[in-house]
Image (cartoon, rainbow, N blue to C red; front, side):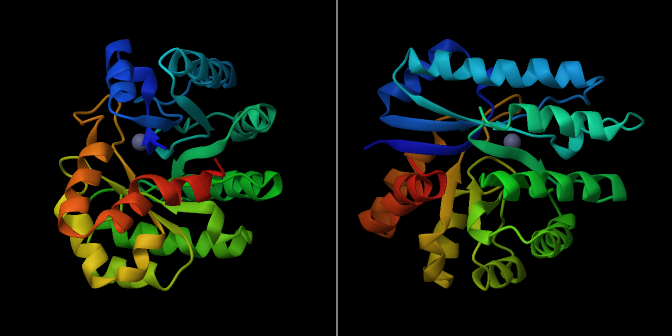
Length: 257
Ligand SMILES: [Zn+2]
């Protein structure tokens, strides 16, 4: 039973990186929709989703299962185009997708809120897990609160949701410890460190049943082996059982693999 990275963008990774993941006992990775530019047409979104589906074949060659996420990341939302047509593409690909994501709020304007709401409705109707981005800095708390409100409005089960890129801000940990959503820790410079995960588990032990680790490896500086490295450190500091939950078991339950 190997590691699961719950949030990656493997289309940016070289084949040798995939081979290294396999050598380091990775069993599955979740590869999510995202381009660092907005989509200019529904057709370009379709091409992106087809590319993501192709990642299943590329990962299979190294012996890793790829779970594919489709969706409109807040930074990819086209500004002046008919959003319904883009949502139609998500509906079209929903049966081949394993996950809706990466979706969420970034600047938190009305357009982002409406697009998140619509995508969560699609996830609810098709019983798909959803991975939700949160922005950096002081907007994170505001985005998490608004996201939780939208989740409740839409009526999707919180057990289908990952609130991702969580930090160890005490207010955030307190809010999330009262919810049933899963919590994504992205082990990447500027997002979270192994020490942050240790702090979160020590202060809120119940969270260890709902933490998912990820690298968010893609087009930004990141360490695609960070889940394996975090597992080793958690084994040393907190113990193998908790490490196993965060790096493998919780993801198996959440993604039903
Ligand atoms: Zn991401």
